[in-house]
Length: 384
Image (cartoon, rainbow, N blue to C red; front, side):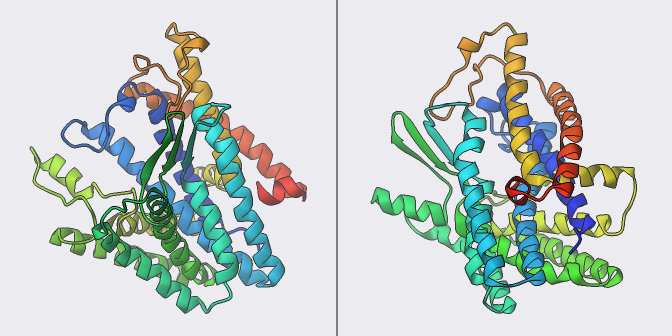
């Protein structure tokens, strides 16, 4: 089956957006101390810079489920399901090694952060077994998780550390200071994100429809998701741990309304972000222009882009430090430290300039690897 360009265009767009958040994390002056979504201290440009990147993780996870469906539709055999299992294991290995090293540049690995590649890897491993079930069952399980898992916020904290870790891996974002020299951050718990992957898997059939019907279904899904978000958010009763409230002005009240919870992904967060994603898929479907062709270059090689961009962002951070008069010896390597001295950093406009430069550098690299992958069938291109 040929690649579906609608998916690659949309995935390419969110990959470009994702790099902005990571550049901000590592280079923006107040990023070490300020929460950009805290309405009591943030600015509108900073809030929106962070908020737009909320789109990335649910899009990646959803489309990973969709891609798994399309792969199994071609040949739903034990061999193909075993490939999903192996792919998931590869993603887990990358998360615990190359990706975490890019975050922290700590050869002692005193911090492990489990985030989007971790949950995609675990999700593919689960799908390798569950894909034998009827798709309507998987759709029901996925929707049930997305709708109901916010109720788990009512579960009191467990006193037992082992139970805390088990619960966190499944349901709750939590930091575990295992020792003064080792931190484990479960940023993306498995179950709520797997619910999104299952919904993506169940929606895979949308992309097998004729173009006119596919566009109609994508627009319908966008309208349903965004409509439900508006109705539930207006009630301010259920669906997110952070209710919205009237703020100091109209703009900040709107920002409060949009300020949905990602850790873990709430029902309202999922509805809003998937609604935007469905809209982007609808717009991208059948669109052919220089911008979409540019995005396809990134969307063709998502894992390659993800790995390389982290190392480029970390390199940009180190280059910024050296340009500001710091030495390599000033890197702060240790638990939960990206390495940047607290007084270093750049302003938000400079963050955008660095981001654009980084995306430009990634383009020829992704184009080269996309061409290499298309002409070479080996272990590397099969999994990366």
